Length: 411
Image 1 (cartoon, one colour):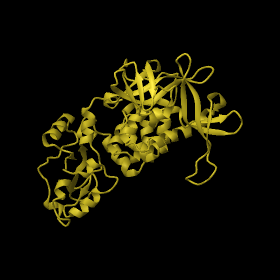
Image 2 (cartoon, rainbow, N blue to C red; image 1 turned 90 degrees about the vertical axis):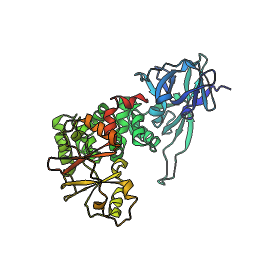
Image 3 (cartoon, one colour; image 1 turned 180 degrees about the vertical axis):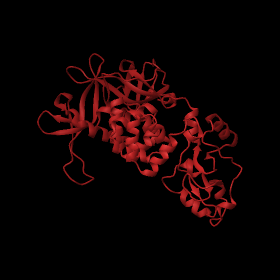
Image 4 (cartoon, helix red, strand yellow; image 1 turned 45 degrees about the vertical axis):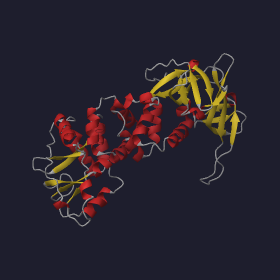
């Protein structure tokens, strides 16, 4: 039996089916449009179909809403979703906003809202599920809940923005950085920046590494120099260098002056290289050990939480010093090989010396072929004195092989 009233948050993830009962996707959000008078009217649903593509399904093409499923006419426009200026996404933009109650009893935040089928087959916002501010300092305390009609509340202007972003961040808290980046790309530009600004520095650094160049620049442009420096400090040096290469020179220098000196030096060095060369691709933070270091010592470095999996696959052995630019490059020891030897074994006896390092000016096309020919995860980069100055990793190679809009293809 089709419902005539449904709470929007309960629709998230519901299956969308055609008249024959075949599943065509799932509900991501519901869009509403504000009107000059009366409650907002639902205009349609944001639906994820095969290939993770997001499309818009007008509410007029929804024939039935029931427990756990939405039935449509079967006619779906496959063009990628683009939000219109007068439309607002309920889950992404409205839930979490603060409202004041017109009876003078104070304020509350919107936890859910119901849309109801009217006489003209329009779906209109009919009721809000609200939560009062908590009255206890206990971390487990929660405010009282109540229901109210749209006409009984008033939105509290800009004072709701921080709370709204925080609630959305809580919803996204379990997402991996790449998935969170995709979720942000689905938001309107202003909303994306608002949510990004509310992320803590480490989370924002991880997300920026996954976002397209234009969105990276838009977000950094909204941060003051001190916070931008903190965030860029936490990014992989190659990603930070790529981002800063697109900022105005004056701002780049101002941010670099505020960064950790070693991080800033690495970024300045990386920015000297063309982006389509080994120098432009490489990271300056590989795991580096001495030849007399043991397997146990190398494994301890690999286990560190802050080491990316792609960098933990190999340990690079050099003469001192052991930070880039290092002493003379001697070879690499692969993680899998270390697993086959006792903890006291010296790395010098396990070296793979057949993997030829590349120079920083090596063109990306050569790097692609090298990775493919030898099934590599990481490729060392050395200077003219054979000192290790960085490592090209397979994830950065993939970023250059994929089309510029690959992140958007799945949306």
